[in-house]
Image 1 (cartoon, rainbow, N blue to C red):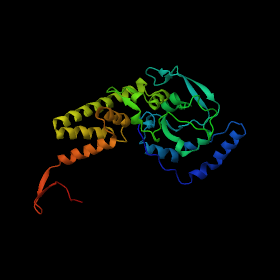
Image 2: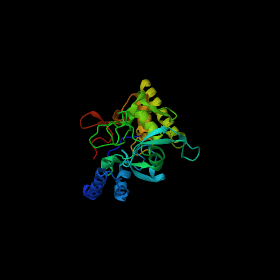
Image 3: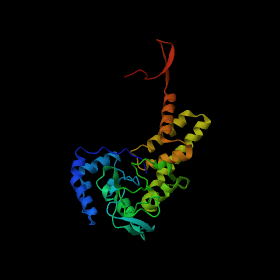
Image 4: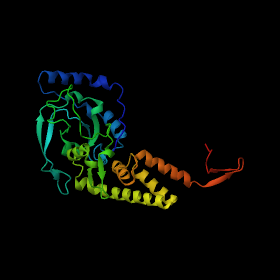
Length: 298
């Protein structure tokens, strides 16, 4: 998982969802089941999240456009479930087998159904197959039925949230995932989204994880040996692998933190410094000093 910058709400969004939001609130106040008009399916809204997330699922970081993506409600709108049995991925089918949930509230976070800050783009496998209406919180028991005045602490990581997923998810050189330092956010997120599933995620992550680990080790050794040219090659490869638009960039950044102890801005800064040192030097005849080739050009 990778942190993204949430897209801006479209002009007129509040007005467009205002009437249906009030209708939902009235139904819930009267003890009736609300009728959720699926305005989140509008192409205009979906395109904004596709652009902000570079076409990737906000949860598993695969290209969601390869299988039907949808606007997902981070906090479920209609009901709240708890996980009864984790289940496994059905071999070769990318489906879910033996996963069971139980309803803990017949009403969900209905007041957030049309909240732009509660939306994100998710692939069908994460959204329908694994997350469903699960929403783990720190409070126990889960405050139910949910109410807008209740205090709760979500443990599910949000790609648009304040918690950096890199701080809570750790990956091996083979792409296996665990909670970093036993993080309760990491553990809850892995369980809720099935991020340890082997066929559709771990096997796909493996090649990226192996490349990131190889370049991290190479960079570390090149810096120890003072081989700056080699260090530059490894650093630039890592920056490329961890680019926001790349598959499993969040995992790459997590490996960089684990292997090198660097946060992503530090990694990018190191790559820039190594590139600057590698530029050929020429003598400036006007001042008798050396300057990088290309310096001063516009």
